[in-house]
Image: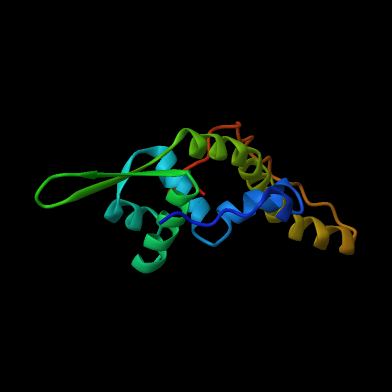
Length: 145
């Protein structure tokens, strides 16, 4: 059964359309895990700690319906199913790279700000530790957030 796709005019902007595909707490983490390698369901469950089987199954189905994830069923006993990113899914991960870079920068900036604010209020100077520069790279896996 294919998911009903909204008409292009139903979206306010491109970000609205993208959020319709990746919206939810776990979808981006699923994409990160699948960017690393093709995974079976149990591998994905371990790669995305905290997600329930029901939610993971639901999100995988939605991503499959949206053409982001490919589900391959092998005719074996016991049955084996593997999930991988489609070319569209790979392009979505590439589009998420700048968002990941912004998130990393924001984390580092937030870590520096509390000390800087306290120093500014008291009038004393605090030497900030240099922050290692993070090179732009493909979207990291969940364990590398």
